[in-house]
Length: 401
Image 1 (cartoon, rainbow, N blue to C red):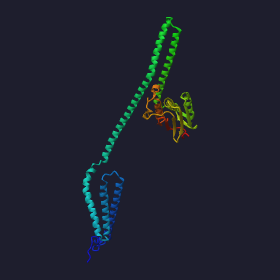
Image 2 (image 1 turned 90 degrees about the vertical axis):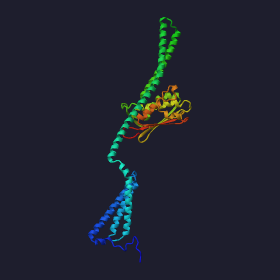
Image 3 (image 1 turned 45 degrees about the vertical axis):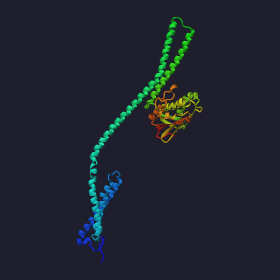
Image 4 (image 1 turned 60 degrees about the horizontal axis):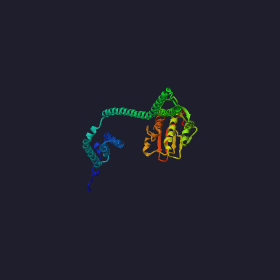
């Protein structure tokens, strides 16, 4: 006599016999079980996809346990229920129900452990209130940031004005002293003249002193005027009153011709490389100030103790930008000074009359007026190179060539 096993179905009758094989009851049960099984399988797939795509989901294992395992076991249980109508595989059915029961009990216990966490999750209305509060905080932060930026601008302007006042004070002080001396000498000469005590030598000495004083006054007043002009250029004028299409190479040559005397005095050789066809829409005076300040910066600072004095200017265009590469063969910039090159009033030659505004003017013109960028690369003894890049607007719908 053989002993039946747990999965042995020979001693059982199919479930359909309980229905007396009535087609209406049998097929209603079968179709219901199959559809329910398919629905559970679909829910299982959806839960798995949901957990996979939502990487930020808290307790993903809980969703897999409650959503996937239970639904998978329940679906399998209903599918087995449809099968046992014809095949009495009650052992398999019992195992599936046991798995379903185990996972359901585990989920029923765990859900009370994780329930407080899910209850603390904010509802849509709570999230909306928090978003409103965050947006309000962000608006206040933007207002504070704008106010801070404006304060920084005002502080920068204040420092700039203070620097200009300090720079102008010296030449004006010298001019006032020279004028006072000239007035005093003139009064003295006038008194001697009234008493007929003016000698030819005294008159000659007076004229010599007057000439020296006049030259001193003129030079220092000119220096003051240059400082005022430079100060006006620091605040770039964005007006559109002097905008037109001009040939870059032709205009640059005009600029360089005005600097020939300075270059000649410094024994400096300048080379310009630029395509004749490059044209640019804008205010050519901006280009004048940029090139003039770059050249004068090299003349003033770069060639003090160098024998080779070369300046190379190369102007090219890309699809959308004009690139001006300026390079001198001078002494270079110290590492500690590189980050200060574009700061207002920074100069290593203040004792020689340098105001320290030249490169700051160039920086403002490139970044503010031309909406471009400027970079500086320099090594001691190997010269300095400035690369300027800004939009090449030609106003004819095509880039410069």
